[in-house]
Length: 64
Image (cartoon, rainbow, N blue to C red; front, side, top):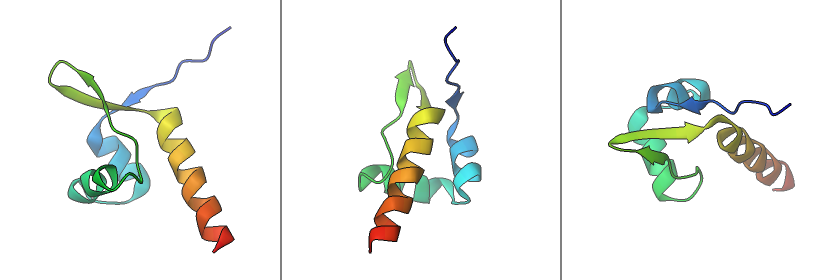
């Protein structure tokens, strides 16, 4: 059985990461976070991609 990977809104991603929406878009621009999936005019982020980006950031922080 396949697990469902929810698509998150910008507000949901920002709330999860405890950042503002402008900071969310800055992190996307600098490559720290993945670009959104575009559904027409809507932007959504795969929950698994956001979690992977958080894990990668933690690993970079631990290595420093």
